[in-house]
Length: 140
Image 1 (cartoon, one colour):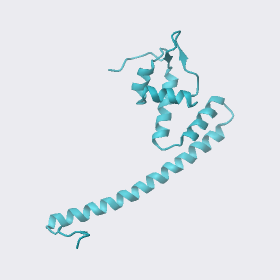
Image 2 (image 1 turned 90 degrees about the horizontal axis):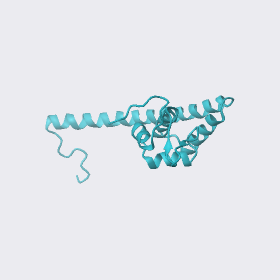
Image 3 (image 1 turned 135 degrees about the vertical axis):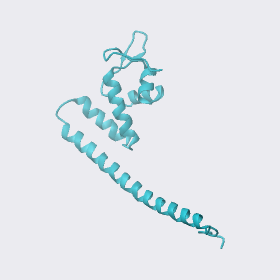
Image 4 (image 1 turned 180 degrees about the vertical axis):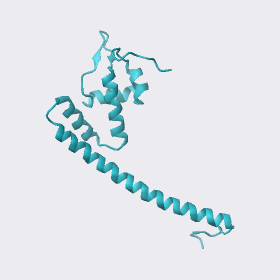
């Protein structure tokens, strides 16, 4: 069960893992690779404490990675955000290039789905008529 926190209340690595779908190992990797936009605070005992803004950023990172953004591009994006105002044009270019890649992937998947839908129809029609024997049989 998820724990409810106030925006100012820090979150443990386990709580952030639950909210983002990333494992604790992945969260440590993101930090080590410079994919976060701010330093992760630590307790006196060295335990990571994440803010609501850290979680919000990680959720964006998850979507960018799920959509196929290369790790190098995500690192560059995080670096630009960390540097603050003044590089918005470069951020926009990076995101727009990625959006174009995603659009191309969607187009390719739609074309694949069209072929699959057509083949499903062919097989369904032949099976409904009882004429499926030998349908694309490479042995005949």
